[in-house]
Each structure stands twice: as C-alpha cells, then as structure tokens.
Figure (cartoon, rainbow over the protein chains, first blue to last red):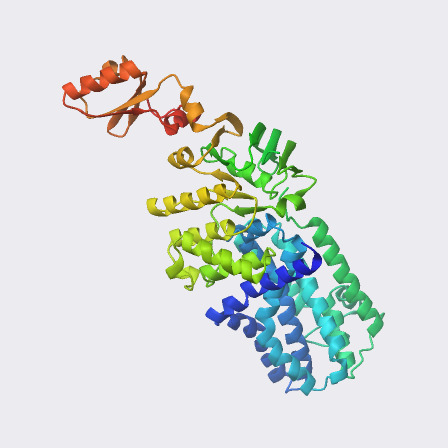
Length: 248
Length: 301
C-alpha cells in the first residue's frame, strides 16, 4: 500500500478504535476529562484565579500527552489481548500506519476536551493568527507522546505493566515538566533537562504566543521549535528502528 | 510455486531459552488446506507466526508465496490474512464494525468491503448479531467475528490459529464450510487445531509436530494407509481381562472403555467375541487421532 493508503488505513483504525467506541460508550470520556480539569480547578482556586491561563495550557498539553503516552497501555491491550496488532502485522498496513491509527484513536478520544480547551485558550488571550503554529506544536506533543507510548508497549509483556507505564509516562511528560506552573521557578539545571521534553517547549511557545515571552536561559521561541522538531524526529526514528512490529 | 517452503527452520526463544522449532522442512502447496497438529506447546503457533511474518525465525529459511519471510515481509503481508490465537473482539464495536472497517483499513474500497462483509456475515450466520456490541455476544459468536475478519479479506493465503477453539459443533461445521469455499476460490489455508477430526475432514495435508520437530506429514489418507494397526475395537465394560485383550493387539484404556488397536482380521475376531459375550463393542478404522496419540504421546496403556 502506498503512503496515501497507509494514511487512509490510519484514519480508519483511529475511527474504529475511538469514534465507534465512543458512540456506544460515552463513559470512556470521563477519565480523559477528569485529570486535566481537576488540575485546572485546583490550580485556579489555589492561586485565586491568577494561574488560570497556565492551568488551561497545562490541561491542553496534559490531554494530548496523556492520549499519546496512554498507548503504552492501549497498544499493549491491542497486542496481547485483542491480538489486533498481530492481525495488522499480517496485512498490508505497515507499522507507521498502525501507529498513526492508534494515535488517531487517542486524538479522537481527546477531541471533546480539545473542543473545550482550545476556544478557552483563545478566549483568555491567544491571538487567533497564532493558532496554526500553536496547533502545530500540539501535534508535535501528541506525536512524540504517541511514539513513546507505542514503543514502550511493544516491549511490555503484560497488561498491568502497560497501563502503569502509560501512567508513569503521562506524569513524566504531562505533569512534571513546567506546563502547569511557570518554568522560571525551576532550578537552572532541572529547567535545562526539561527542555528535552516537547511539552515544556510547547507550553513556553504558547505563553510566548499569548504575549508572555518567557525569559529563560538558553531558550527562545526558535530554540523551542528546534527542540520540538528534534525530540519528535528522535522519538519517531527510535520507534521505527526499535519498536517490535515483528517479534524477534 | 508453493504456498510455503520451509527448509531447516528453527526457532529459539532466547528469553525463555526454549527451542520452539527444530529443523523443520515442510512444503505446503498452493490452494491447499494444510493443518498443523501437535500437543500444546509443540510449536504449531510458532511456525504459523513465522510464516505470517509476525515472528522472526532463528535459523533456516522459509518462503511464503515465493517471498522470503526475512527479506520480503511486505510482499507477503499484502497477500495474507491471519486469525491470531485466543484474541478477543474490541469492546463495544459490532461484528459489522470489526469486519467492514478492517477490510477498508486493508485497502479495499468501501463498496468491495461492504459486499465482502455482508457475504461473510451471512456465511458465518452473524446476520442477527451484526449490529450488536461484540462485548454482549457469547464467546463463540465473538470467535466467529474474529474468523470473519480474516476470511472476508481478499488475501491469497489465510492463516488460522485454532479458529474453532471453544465453538459448538454446529459453528465449527459452519466455519469448515466457509474454509472449503475459500479453497474453491483457489486460496491457500494454513490451520492449527487441536480437533483432529477437523484436520481429517478439512485438510488436503497435515503435519504432526512434537516438541518443535516434524514427526510426519502427508494427506490424512496416506498417513493412515501406512499404519500397522488398521482397525480399532472399542469395548465397554470388563468382559475381557487385560491379558486377553493384549493378545489381540495394543490396548489403550480410555475412561471406562478399552480400545484395542490391531489388524483387520484380529479386529473382526475380537469384535465377534465381544458380541458373543454381550459387551458393547464398536469396530472402526483407526483415525488420525489414534495415529496422533500413537506418535506424540501414548496415553495410559
């Protein structure tokens, strides 16, 4: 199958594993709303509303990174329980098509939360003309997280480890980096380490787009973009070389 | 060109240090239904997964439809479909979702996918369940959905790993019918099963694998032609002493019955004697199951 057909396959797999699922099981949305909106609520009330914009940025990035890193559990389930991965390995769909498909499923699951959070971001000050670039950085976060989540899943030998790995990755990518709080408060050495995580750069780029350009060591919007692209390229390259599509 | 040509194929699972396949040389013809038989852990699934490009071999060579599994997996994958062992359906998706959407994902047009999905749903008697969530269906129906996902494809070669496991007799026969229809279309099928009657009825050829080694292969009729003990006599009850039975042939105890495996003449003599003594008796040709048990693990004698 050529690239266009692989992309079509990815959209269909994504649709199959999310929209058809959601149509019959709306309860699946609850978990995705629960954590980011709880954090948004806590941050807003504990700062008297001052950190509400940071809360919205953090929630947005947490939703997108969680549906990606969550593949560590979901893809383990597709591989070990449903054997869907085996089904697609022995088919014209290639690894990238499959990975993109299950990543789309996560994105489609996240779409109701995005429908709330993106307009909210514009409402609290994101200029509309910056939206395409912001969306691009969000796509980078989603793809990076999905590649990492999928990669981990192919090495996971049981379902429980898969879910737990997903939770751990979600904390490492979506909660601990400076997405819900200002990067400026981090010690310099730790801050520099967090530059390697695309959620950090996406959060800083969104703040920059909203007019609050962060003044941080070794960081500028250009650096942020380079780091997002670099980390995504590395994640995709490592995943395509190391992930176990065919078992050794 | 054969459907599969395996030469000295071996597989070692390094993590568990298990030799799953050892020096298997096997040919499967195009358009055949070929069945792999073996006890649990014999290596059937390992062979199937290697051929289906899901697992790398350790040593040896294997080609599928003329393409090497190591070097040309993409060429193979465009021509095959698989029913993996012991999988499950996906949550609330309906049988229609499972079949139709996976066909489109494999690259079929909507129209062709619809036609194939409708035909397969009818063939596998899933019509009344087609729009029900799979997680509300019985285990047997869910298994039929999984089988449908592979047999509905236009693949030249279909791999089925224990496709009838847990199905009732009627459902099994329904699947056999579908596999026969696929074969009539000129497509090849590689099957693993624990149901030896299934292998005997369906297969053009079978291979018996034991602890990773090929024990024997050929058509069921050929294999049975070459056995020494051509008939079996089943006797219920204790009208014969074990010593008496042993004088007629090899004795196998199966729950409350004795099975004596012997030649035609002695078998008839024993059956006649059992009738005279008023025992329940059945005389029949040996089956593939008798051969299988004989080759891979004799039961209590």
